[in-house]
Image 1 (tube, helix red, strand yellow):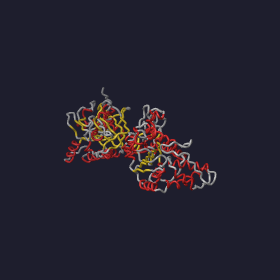
Image 2 (cartoon, rainbow, N blue to C red):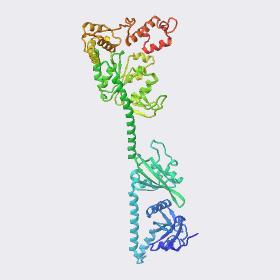
Image 3 (cartoon, rainbow, N blue to C red):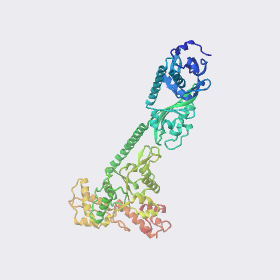
Image 4 (cartoon, helix red, strand yellow):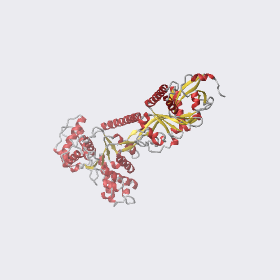
Length: 617
């Protein structure tokens, strides 16, 4: 029922031109001025206002929202029409008022066609309500008001734009245009989703029906999104957070208004902070592992710390180290056990630009084959049974430095492929993880095996050896360079006596002759053991040399006490002798396994471990 309260007329007292008082909740016109009835219809009071909006219903909703928040607003983007559906070229000004607690809208309409006609009449002498001067004053007032509203909207730091129910852009403020690089002409009346919101950052298509902005006015939901991307006109993405709010015409949903801000700089700062925190955590783990590694390295007794020798072979090795050391080329060191391959590796590392970082040492032969992959690549907690914590592998520990793989031929074949892939891609993935970590390291590898024979036997990947063997260095055995024995003896004796707290004894010519006549199957390592033993047992000022074994290939030892090198050499020689005796047969009644009293499978395993093949017998 129409409210006929005449007190509504008081809101129109002093109103200038066509003015309406509207109850928006009921869409009812409560009071009008005569000019409003002349402009729209004779009988306006009690009528609905919505039918008088010809176009721009969504902008009218935006206009009402501004009135609600600011108390007053003005727009020219809403087209009105009279009762006979004649479009009016007008601007409207709204002011929020209240009556007995109810919110009402006082709406003033400025019809430019009527004003122009009346201005002409004024020029002819017919004054309208004070004449042309009053009309000009009113026009100036409303122009200033529109300019003020536009300044406020464009002064906002956030980007603001509106879309109608068809997804067409209805307005875009200056901040939005500057952030996106699009102009009003580019966007107004166009589908803005296809302009700025068409793809995800990973390149995946972003259909409009899945867009939260469209969902906000299709399902009447306010959507707050903290991390998406809008696309600039130049094709570059910007990270944004935005709020999409539905707008209504009475009870009818007509569109949405979006307020967004560019968070690219903030997101990048947060990303860098996250990466820094990850790096701190990784460095913490790495430093713990490096500390444990270095403590272990300190506790390992080393025979000597420099490459000692005057032979041409040693001088050649030193020149090779000087050549390859300053480069990042991978180095493959070959030679028998005990010749000093690890010493050469340390010298190469110390000549490089990576010497400020530790050289990480992996003794492949000392690691259980089942665990060597974890040793190389690291692990995350729960990657396998027994993986109780995250742990970097040797590759990761060597990042920025050098990784020395001692006896590379002991790495299982399947792990060799994984290692080659990591080195070629220059990144490592811990077991149980899916995140790749970059690698910057140099590889120095060593082996006592015959590489060609191991490759032919299928125990070494040729492509891995080609990758590692960019610069090969061969360390000759001690028996082929007896001229190095005197200087090595003096050096090793000085170290041993310092460690034992004893005076350095004299090395007689006879002792030196015995040292140079021996073939040294254990090479420098065996020499160091003999020298230290001599320093212990020498009771006078002369070095007492006790070489406990004279093992040669095919010969039986003459002493009951054998060094590890003696035992290894004897086992090798004994197996070779048995294979010769059996004419190369392993199994069977007269096979080498029967002669040794072991199973054929055991003998096959030992042959593989010792790197023996048919050419040895």
